Image (cartoon, rainbow, N blue to C red; front, side):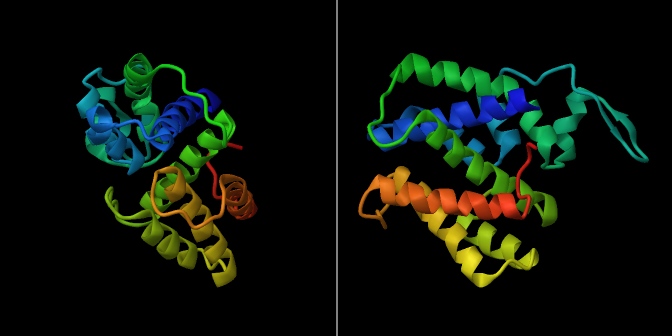
Length: 202
């Protein structure tokens, strides 16, 4: 499972680095939007490289689900992340071939990976709790899921501030004087997610 974490975080972290650099991403916009919103079925279909054939799922009352039928289940959980692993690797190859190595003066690769993981984890927890909606905005994901968890308003606000830093990296209106200030606030939001065990990997 840790390998899959590195695949997702590395791929989407790299894409966030591309976006922050100001390079046009029109060529990959649909693919990035699909994976960003947790729409794994759409993402896999866009890449057209298939899914791993060695993932076996045994659901209570249903027995073993054949790999080729697993996408149709729409469980929207860690299984989908596993099923998308081949597509994520192919996506990374395509992007790296197009853009190459990118150096960012403000954030480390680990920072970009944390930003990628932040949105993925929140959407995955939301989708596992409520009816799947791949296009709900992250602001609403946070509000609805955190209220469901009974988290305090002050802590929800700190998580939302972390979200605004992610938006800043994506090129939206900056709410911080600089990236260092934003990164401090973002890391505070990660501590809150950790506190409530809103994470996938132990």
